[in-house]
Amino acid sequence: MPNVTANGIQIEYDTFGDSSFPALLLIAGNGAQMLVWDAEFCELLAGTGLFVIRFDNRDAGLSTKFDEAGIPDMMATIKAAMEGRTVQSPYSLDDMADDSVGLLGALGIEKAHICGASMGGMIAQVISYRHPQRVLSLTSIMSTTGNPGLPVGKPDAIAAVVAPAPEEREAYVEHYVNTWRKIWSPGFPFEEDRVRTFMGKSYDRSHYPQGMARQNTAIIASGDRRPSLSTVKVPTLVIHGADDPLIPVEGGKDTARVIPGASLLIINGMGHDMPKGVWAEIVTAISRYSKQANAWN
Image 1: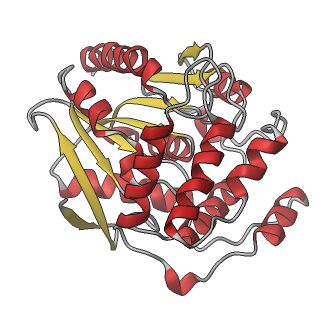
Image 2 (image 1 turned 180 degrees about the horizontal axis):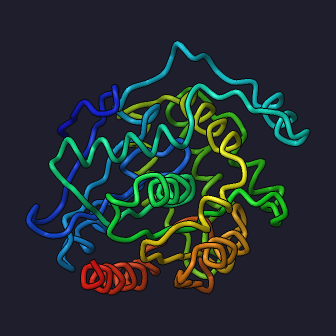
């Protein structure tokens, strides 16, 4: 896969479709590599007339790692946030948003549709108010606003996600198969073979758990984004699973409520993942909304 230097770091990326089509930038979640955007899913989006770009965030996959920053003390970070103190983070969601826009610039793309899932949705939100001139539309999937008053995820889902994974490959894959079971969409069959293949590929490509801790610190440090989100003027689509155990659906509802004119799509049976059973609905929604946004722009 190709890479570019942008915003002072190296960014690994991949593309699907015709580069003359409107661009759609896909932003991955906490600790995830670009592989989380399944190639088949990307091809479906490209088939609707979009030039699809997926990439590795900083500290994930084959993009620049921040080893010199060390591993954050997550308990101290959470305690500081709960006490209303400033959270120290090696970098911010603003920095990660600037990475994304830097990638677009390196590819010669002036404006793009921006879509992110989970932490990626938060980064996409930041891009929409930090770099509105670069955004054709915003799609925020299974994400939230940083509103401290919202319900938190289910304890077993949170525990599964934050539990340290084994270093050995087979145990690592098994660990994450069990993690995905905890956050999987209850309305759809668990795709164990797909999850095992994905986690095996991720491990072989770049096993780097320390990056996830730094990204998580950036999320916590970002705080409540509602004041900034209320200024967003780009066309916005919010997608959330009704049965998300990690970021409850109230996060999606809050996002749609705060961003003026945002559209909200709640998918019954969907958890904190995108099983193949929801692909058609999500692809159709993004395609329809991007075409409307193209007309508005």
